[in-house]
Length: 305
Image (cartoon, rainbow, N blue to C red; front, side, top):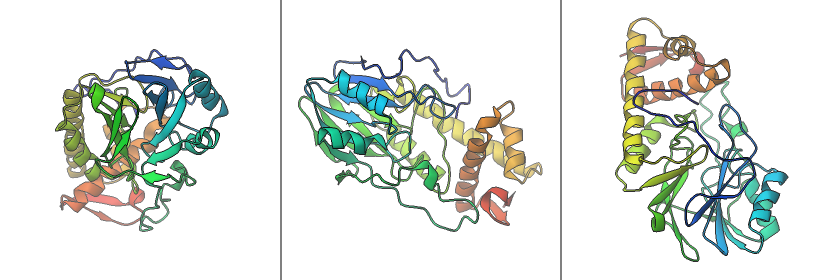
């Protein structure tokens, strides 16, 4: 979801044509799926790490054109590993078909598990996830995938999704940040699978790292990641303060909060904005700052404590 904020200087330039494999660094190539939209920007970025024997990160949707373009671009090379940051349908479904063609091992995030059923008529987010995704090996925080001339280390970054991982490439001081941090847009955190508390904790974790560049799941690279992450943290704290102010002013429903806080937002993005506001409200409720009356959560009334 794109929101332009002074504390988050978004970069919506992207020099990549769909389904064309491009070198973006000595060890990294990128091919962008042709699935652009309001939540995916120009499309899902699939990354290739290494040469000869390679790893593929986030093969994207189950799109034969994208898969064929990737395989054509890698003609004469071997895909040894397929890594997946999280199970959203724009990132994970291509893994199974790519593995079937290449025999590569699928490693990375855990399979999606539906969240609690305490959300009334809100579904558990199943439609957003690839329910068929089954990795050969689940990576935990710090686990390593060793390749020829490269290493990839899992960095647990829950928040956008409970099972979200980033992958660090120490040879280039780079981090494949998935949908947790992107240069083109702030990240949607949609309960019940998404958690604002986990998202903020993961931002703090990344801020403490010394990565020189992030390669995100959509859009171009984040070139000054520590500064950018600080901006994201400030942006979320500012949003929380604004929500509290609107609650005290008498705006107790999420739909009203969205209209007040996201002036001029495209109608197609209002649903995502509502989910992010809900994520903030749930975090604030857990910390004793607000309380909810009524259900389901998107229709509840929220008041400051």
